[in-house]
Length: 68
Image (cartoon, rainbow, N blue to C red; front, side, top):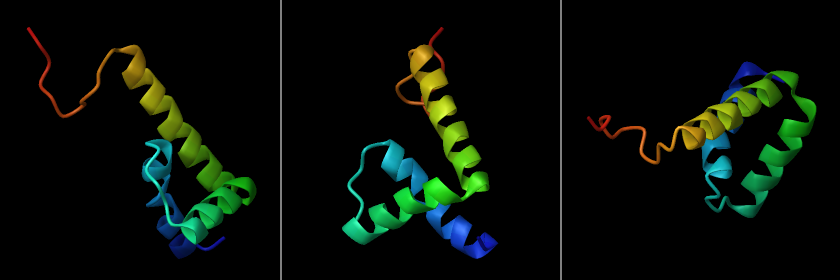
């Protein structure tokens, strides 16, 4: 895959993980790309792991300052 194509696809990974609706063709392209591109598979897994780690910490808003 080309770097430009991967960057375009990666822009949609977070929205997909957050459950935001993607246009049909965009969602299809993202899902297909995640089946064939090893680099983007790693990026997506990293996003998933980060999201799960934040959930485990009980953090719902990563922009909110920590409570004291």
